[in-house]
Image 1: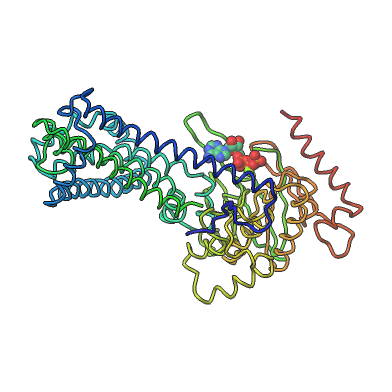
Image 2 (image 1 turned 90 degrees about the vertical axis):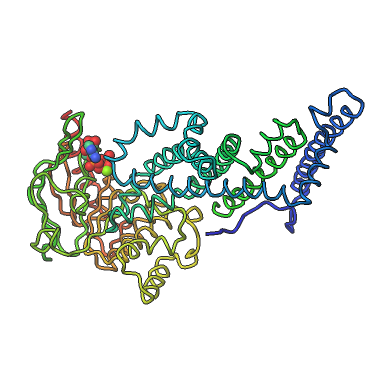
Length: 274
Length: 258
Ligand SMILES: Nc1ncnc2c1ncn2[C@@H]1O[C@H](COP(=O)(O)OP(=O)(O)OP(=O)(O)O)[C@@H](O)[C@H]1O
Ligand SMILES: [Mg+2]
């Protein structure tokens, strides 16, 4: 499905001087933006480090960049850190897969059967507007203090929105495209596989970009309440025993994990759209 | 010419919670084998409904439709339906778009590709085989849609304002192209159009429908005294403007009734 990209490039053979100047200006501007972004980051870290050293802020409460790095090195030596990251990643990916597969499957059923969708509509809306963190304590009681609870909690965060969004996307497919399939002698199954699903691949991918973030949020909430491992556990435990370096390190790693997962999906989105 | 299609006292009414809409009322006519029939009528008079009934997408409220004397449902004849827009699927290239119908009807085999290539070649699309719809001109898209329909080897072709989305010049060219293709393949065709000139230039016979609910107002045989008829040449036939005035008056009448 990949297509040739018609990208504007500055390496063309016969570009006019004005076009070259335009492209060069664009490149310079991009570079300037990047430089400022890096300056802000370095400035912030340096300010934080220095203020803890000269005592403007209390390094016991605010930790410090060097403290965070030291914790990171200490914890990775025993492999402990990677264990916690791995657990959180695993839970996130399992929840993400369940949300997408079940969500799309249920949306297909609702699209297929108008009566079922009408009957379930009010329930879906109520469940979707409910703050899911309210359910987490219930899951702990029902399922116990384990990974099952965390995954169910994370799935509950994203699943209802996925069903509702996907179902309305399926319904929004142009009526005439559906008529086309029937004029070519097709049936409802052909409408689903030749038009409804393929035309919604871009919207599925953008929904997945939302869902990966929501799954991570759900997993962290779950780990706050019911876990003995994972980054969410490190954050809660660290704050309870006043090891703020643990907390901040976990948050920094969370940022990196979240960005990484999002980038992977953006890569697939580029690959599957023109 | 023998009779291929017979529309026998067809009526159709749409029902919704807001009320019922009678779209067609007691419509009867026939189409001969190899004939090109034009249908004109005011907007909303049930023209698309008529084609959907013939294609079997809708069941008439009353009346029957026969092909070769048999009811359409049991005739086993293939009916090709070209919609107002080409509706090529954006995510398929030209080749995969024209084979969509064959794929759905499980008629696509390795041997089909020779025939498909032939058609693409004849109608100037072979070099665009791997292009996506957004890379094609309006005329090319319309031809691709026609090939998609023709590959199913229909006995009757239904064309619902197939040129209405094209600009005027392309429209004339594509009308010539498509008319030529249909004649070459010896197909029977029913063309719906808003454009009186288009109906006269392409058809052997024109049916004028009344305002909603659509009824047959008049059936006009088109006899043009020109040789080598193409839709474009037909427009310069001496009788052309007489037919135009005749049909225009019929339509005008029904507009005034409102
Ligand atoms: N699915 C439907 N439900 C209810 N009413 C309908 C439906 N489809 C069409 N109609 C009504 O039936 C009438 C005939 O519709 P149809 O589309 O056949 O007209 P048409 O002659 O093709 O119009 P146009 O020239 O605008 O294409 C219209 O008044 C329309 O509003
Ligand atoms: Mg219509």
